[in-house]
Image (cartoon, rainbow, N blue to C red; front, side, top):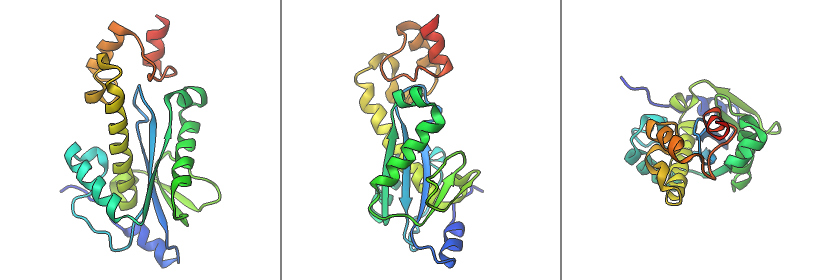
Length: 205
């Protein structure tokens, strides 16, 4: 049976008096090109759409459907980005912190507690807890993963028009066979992450 995320962690926090609980997740850490995107979502207690899961476990069509539902039903949500240049200049960990900070700044409601997917760091001034497989088990984080993934996919699809050789519209910047072959044939482009080993090896060959 498939695993679906629940409100268990959010409900525990509400019993402790927290009202605005934000789930946070990112999309694009493993990509070789384009920005890193962080999603933040604050859900109402009555939020209960059927079938929401971690974005990686959904088809693109289902992700788009749930993106619209979350956008309409969430108490608040936002997106923050870190560019490929920031990833190269700062390193992935610090760039991720920047993306999280930007997403939180764009919220209209200030969250009182953060539920973070594993390996994501929030600001010290807001209480927070990270969870291994948070995007699989916790509904707020699963929703954040959907918002981040759909947003990033749309960004990279638009960028793909400027770099048709790399088929970014289909590989989304990940290191697929077609992407690797394009790198060998055409070299790197402006949105490649030059600090990543597969890209650096093409530059230095």
